[in-house]
Image (cartoon, rainbow, N blue to C red; front, side):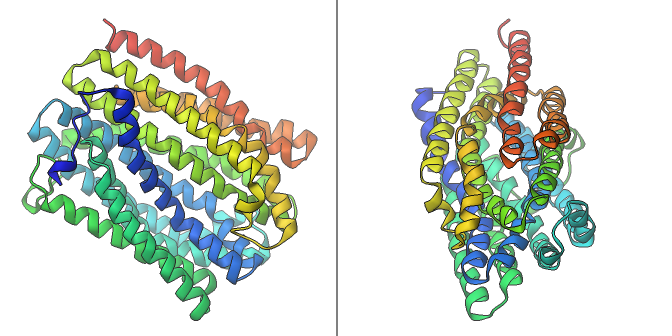
Length: 446
């Protein structure tokens, strides 16, 4: 394991950020494939009703899991900072505290997901014919939330110290298991929605076990040890100070998206299924772009801790450039070959036609989200999390809700609903960049 670790404070940044990000891209994609495999299998072998049931849960699942992703972002920032500064004691305390916090938070989320899915899905106006299947999927899937939290914790730690390959190997193995179990449960056991949910749960616990085992076996300052497992009050405060606002931001983002889902649900079941299939493109593109946001945080965090000011700004600019470029390339490719992509999830021509509305509009929009998300990651790398969260809540979340009840309410068309994404990204990005420049000048360029 030691030989895979990278020193992010030395060497050419463009090359190092790219090669650091590639394993992260693949790792993020594999996590997306857990849910995508569920949707593809039920769409191909269980019918459009099962597809709609699983697809109707996407926003709700993301609401909870994105909170954990935000929390892991705080873990990444602080581990990178202490590791870059060469402080072994603080690094070790951060890692052990982070594991316990991740387990506690995910346990609460698991209970919420198991107890209240029906009530939440009804608030979202989930179509009655899809409701029972959606509730069943949520209750089983959320049994795996603690495992997902533990894997994200481990991935955040490894990314912070410059090691991104090993988490990819673990997730790849678990991903293969997920696909095999999906096919077995749905085709041979005829379990439909329940089958794909159980396949995801099993694969999540496999990936969590492997990454925790690796942290216990390694010998560096970020290694786990049973005797060191306790919560440090100071480290917990720091993790929550950065991670909770990030997690709340992600969750509120999804609350805003719930209003978008209500808008989608106002159309036919065919449009709902088409939206569910096309939304998988969001997960693919965002997961690839997210690798550069993680790289931005890790590189800026380590260099901030090491006191290398010249590399901090360059890490941000290079990460923004990479994430924008890859977002545009992937988006335009999906817009051009959307019918092929949607064919992976359904054979229904009308569902594919409905899904293309979303793919075309979003395909031209994805890249611009980089200016918002990468700038937020950069601010958090400098220890600033609360204000960026407030900005994104107002600029994206509140703005989206207002859009749904004004612009969409006026036009009542599916394109008028999807266009809110690029407008909200643009407004939020501008405000986030202004804030980051002020923080950078105050904290770094002095």
